[in-house]
Length: 166
Image (cartoon, rainbow, N blue to C red):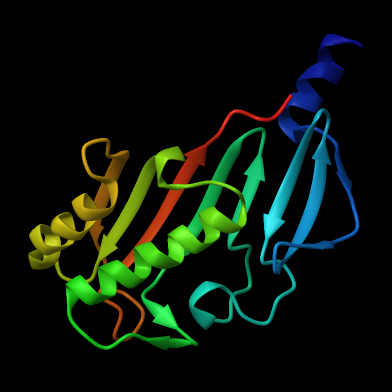
C-alpha cells in the first residue's frame, strides 16, 4: 500500500462490518466487527434502558475487554427516584451495576467513573455512597457540577476492563 493510501486509511479509521442484531442476557445486542475486534452494543433497539428511561443510544459498548457504560441517572421504571443525593446516588450506581452484570462485569472491573452532580454541595455526600460501593480499591474518577435532567441530582458512567477470554 502506498504511503498516501495508508494516510487516508488512518484518517478514515478501520473498515466496519455490521452484523445483524441479536438478543442476549435480557437485552438487545448489536455486534460490529472492526478488523479483528468485535464490538457489542447493549440496549440497542430496546424501548427502555436501565432504570426504564427511553434512550437513543446504547446502554453500554464492549470491545476487546473494555466496557463503556453510558451515564446512568437515578431512575426506576422511567421515573426519577424520590429522595436526596444519597438515595439518588445509590440508584444511579445500582443502574451502572445492572449493566455491568448484564455484560459479565462487576465493580472490581471498573477502572474509571465519571460523575455529574447537579449541586456541588452534594460532593461529600456522594463520596460516602461511592466509598460504600468501591471500598478500599476505588477506580479513577472525575466529578463535575452540571445542570441535570429535571429532578436528577446525579449521573454516573464508567469504563470497565476484563481481559478477553482466549
